[in-house]
Image (cartoon, rainbow over all chains, first blue to last red; front, side):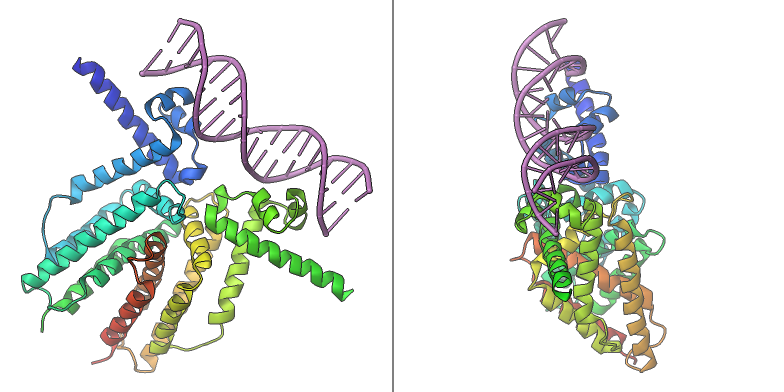
Length: 197
Length: 197
DNA sequence: GTCTATAACAGGATAGAC
DNA sequence: GTCTATCCTGTTATAGAC
């Protein structure tokens, strides 16, 4: 029965969306299964039928978020300056979805603690991101857009740190920080600085 | 009686140090007054005699941390390239005190949520930091070390974002990220880029 | 200042009916 | 799949003795 399966999946996705909001607002530790259940009009026990524990639910939410992200940044295999500008586009987009950004900031903050259920997720995520961005930079070198000998990993770390750090500042004080513009400025200055002589 | 007062203050400072560790490990929401009390060999009720609520204790810890920070970065009123290099020195030092860094990362992450007891503290902190760094940059312009027309606020935001973002990456995956070196590299490249022609 | 005791509650998880 | 009922644990905060 396709119908039955489909409703089950749709239900699960509604739960994930609700849980995402709750985790974003309160962090993992502060989140309440009862409140999540309420948002999808389900009892707390009914919620736990779909995700056996709070911890599993968080992991599912993080994977869900990654999936959403990859729908828009995954397969566009550019390299060089275009790839960096695509990062700036991501930041532009993020400025329009504070909820997603907040989930990420709150969970990464909590997840620096080794025992946290998001710790491994965060580590994998950073490693993958670093590798992707570094690869784009190296591709730029091959194409002659960037000067050879640049430290791809270091620049990748900086780009990622800049994105994350600006997100935190922006969430805490939105009117004072134009996250998108400041990041784009960095990207453009970097592209110029990396141009071969 | 000086003695009595001194013991009281010393006790309070021991509590603050213990609470700092607990908040750093578990965030505000995850922290437990009982565990903090245990660390200073006090009952939970005894602890609350000194700080009337968990919320007040957090605020006291944050102020305490700021005080520690200012002992080492406050009155050195440099400007220009020296001030930026002093920032890199701070990052060097931070790499040796993961506990303090972790407190900051965890709390800033949680505090992006408006209702959080650390929200105001975080906002004030960012505004002050931004103003200080921007002032240093402008002083560099006056002295002719930096080219006029630079966007001091934007560069200040970037420097702060870079510090914070690298801290998170470093805490999550210490072996993969040489926070101090990567930040210093950024600072030196920035100093070079800002030199007047 | 410090303690024990307890109030008052909220959290996650499980059992079992429907 | 969903519910109600319940268990168990842990939380902050307060009252009152010493």
